[in-house]
Length: 52
Image (cartoon, rainbow, N blue to C red; front, side, top):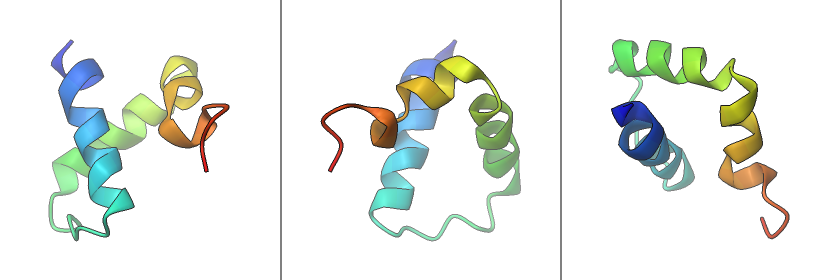
């Protein structure tokens, strides 16, 4: 799925670099749906052992 390899990492980067994407409501819905899945939460950058 494209969201697995492209969309979710880009949204994480947008958050990390304080990019305002608040007007992109469909992306927020997709992110919420993905983050509700255990695999996505375990793979999140902040959940990695070497996260700062």
